[in-house]
Amino acid sequence: MKKIKIALVGFGGIARSHYISLEALKKADLPIELVAICDANISQFTASVTINSGGFEITLPKELHLYTNADEMLAKEDFDMVDICLPTFLHKDFTVKFLKAGKHVLCEKPMALSSKDCEEMLLAAKESERQLMIGLCLRFSPPYLYLKELIEQKAYGNLSYISMERLSVSPTWSAGNWLQAEEKSGGMLLDMHIHDIDMARFLLGEPQSVSTVTCKQIPHYHTESTRLYYKNTVVEVKALQQAHPDVPFFVGFDARFEKATVRMEQNTVRVFPDGAEAFTPTLDTTNPISNEIEYFVNLLLSNASNTKNSPADSAKTVKLIELLRESSGHGGIQLPFLL
Image: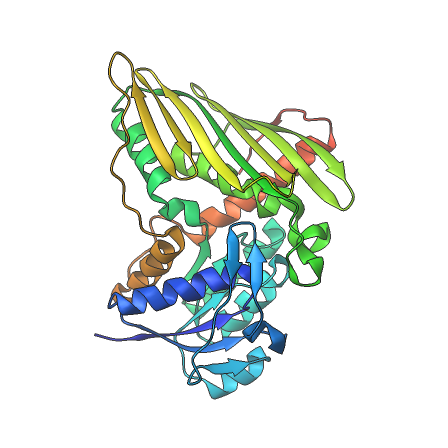
């Protein structure tokens, strides 16, 4: 079987999760080989990094080729795929660069700072005839996939209400503090709120309209409350990025069906059926980042079409985020989502 050779670009916090996943997938016999890592800051290769989900201290093997310049890596290394874990404001330029160089690209979320940048990335993928996928990892997360299955199979009737929530301390861990520079990260709307906004689309399709209220303090939005309007389902999405430093990162959802309530807190799901005992379903415990990487590699190995997380779909989520920003800028007015 062909082995997919991979280069990892960027070695900050989220890249450490990708590196650990790549190593685990290789040990699990996925035919991959990490051949090089590139980061403009040479100290990143030995630095200890902490993000909202924990700390990462990694000792890289001596045989792994390390670069501080992407063009040099392109000139010297033979690889099939690049895993881009750079700050958001660099996503478009580096994705286009590698696609034009004939490489398949897995790029961390969000796809780009704007829908216009997304269109450039889509065009580059089409012209290069290479695969592009965006790392919207919740689409590969077992609790959310379980919820999607309940919705589609109507196991407890129709979904009438869902609330999704994400809570974090202020993101002070990024290199040069780029996460708190709205012109570089897109603010919390694009960086963190996007997870649950994309999940609403993944679970229920396109909303008819949206409204968002925010609280903004220098240097960025830190609180969002969004309502997505569907014909028969109430959808609320909440996010906070200014929690007390001692408050742990939190993620969860509450979903009310006709015959049950399903709750998830910190990736643990509980089902409360009407008239029956609550239970904890047995779910896959695999890491969503590992799952997304494995899915993308298998697309390359089989030359298959991406039916689960296409780049065009990721671009639509960025467009929806732009509409949320417009709504928040006008006091939370309800706006139609027109594709």
